[in-house]
Length: 233
Image (cartoon, rainbow, N blue to C red; front, top):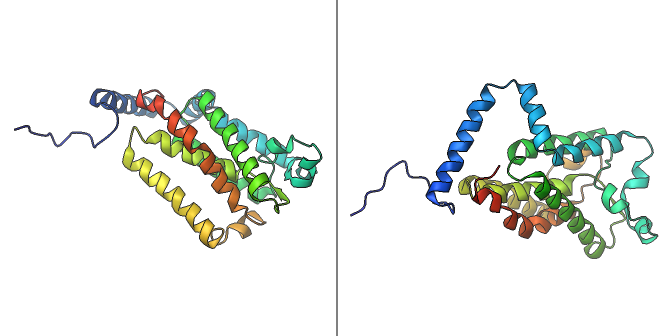
């Protein structure tokens, strides 16, 4: 009869040795981080994991320049006339300071939670995939939508990718993350934007972009979780 230690890790797709190695690495990193001043840790993290902060910085710059918003937002009639740059820049400009502040706050949270779970190349691939998915969804599935702007679609794609990247390390945590995302998307599909959201950002909320952003990255993010299976950071 075999005995099972109480300290045995929960059911996890990682082999026991790889799981324990990843946990030890996380613990060692946490101990090292405690000895590094916050500013130096921030500079180090920005240098290592720069994709999401770079997108946020571009959004801050472009959203702060007066008069750029009408020229850069996703706008259906302008796209039909060949202004293809809007497929990219539409995700970076915002309705105003409040809209920008909410999106940047969410970006920082996602970056702090999941920024080190994928390397820069993979985060860039997730970002571009989400952009394509959102643009395609808005163009083909929402032909009546005249214009759209903001990071919110990308934020939902990043959140989905981060949750899936956590799956091999901590399945319970990943389920909580993905469950919260699914609950939010389900609410928006059935009841519209969360109460107070439109007032907070100063305009209508295009909830379809949230759904397209999350769904478009799921197959890719499931495949990209492979680095976590190997314990890479």
